Amino acid sequence: MVIRSFPRAARCDRIAPFHVMALVAQAEALSAAGHDVIHLGVGEPDFPTPEAVLRAGQQALAEGRTRYTAAAGIEPLREAISGFYRSQFGVTVPAERILITPGASGGLQLLLSALVGPGDGVLLTDPGYPCNRHFVELVSGEPQPLLLTAENGWQVEPHAVAAAWRNNTRVALLASPDNPTGNVLPAANIAALADIARERDGALIIDEIYQGLVYDAPASSALAVADDVLVLNSFSKYFGMTGWRLGWVVVPPALVPDLERMAQNFFLAPSTPAQYAALAAFAPANLAELERRRAMLAERRALLCERLPELGFRIMGEPAGAFYLYLDASALTDDSYAFCQTLLARTHVALTPGVDFGTAHGPQRYLRVAYTCELARLEEALGRIRQFLEQQ
Image (cartoon, rainbow, N blue to C red):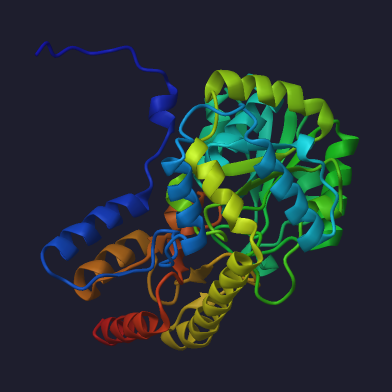
């Protein structure tokens, strides 16, 4: 084999790895050695894909539904999502404004490709989902930090967005519920943020991939507040279809031709079997199962919210959604990555260090817990963490 160097784009050096993936590798090695590892790090619940969805996917394969579909997705699925907005949120969203995408990641790539050119700015929260800044880099945009503070409960305040908006800012990308904080944007804030984007001839993208996973109030959509918000969603989290890689976007009519043309060129089409499987996600019996799972997550959340402060962790803000708690661990460590490494090595409990979620908010003080295991496993994890801290 000839070994030689290849030209490398500068973005290769700007795309940082997930620190949590090193911990995942450490956890896998421990599991392979026979240790009982409790995984509270990666954002994927322990629930399997619902049976109705599996059956629909199997039927699609048996019927030979394996060829390309339209780039925007099959019409029945777009209509089903439109009906879901109408029945669940009281929002009228024509199917023509909905495009099915290869996961929410594919949807975000389409949105940013349509809105952001070289040197254009995109406001991103810190802390926030780390991959977003790399999607901005991919379209040669400029990631612009929107610093959130623990003292303010990690809330996105409209006045802070207005102050952070620069001359070259084109987009504000926010999430509700949010990863890692679990925060949910109030409707009044969404309305004000939409006004800010509108006044500046920019765009507001709301990531709603954890939309159904809220615990203290009914689930909602930003589209109920502002019709010109661009919404990103997914079948991964609430619908339990992480590995199927299927998402969708809702955009104003004027953007549909651009996104559809880009989808044709970038992806050809979303996964055909996954689309037919997803049709079963909206059946009443399946939605009832998803609500049962949401109730289980609420119980897990309640347990951790009660017990983690007893161990010295502080829960900042109001984690009303998703399945994460973002914890201030400064009373226990000033290096959350090292803390997570040592905790995993000694107790076989895997958490996520705050350094994956930004740079400006003091991430070495924070860590994320995903309540993605059943209650008995969470109790076991809490016991191991308590024993570890007592031995420090």
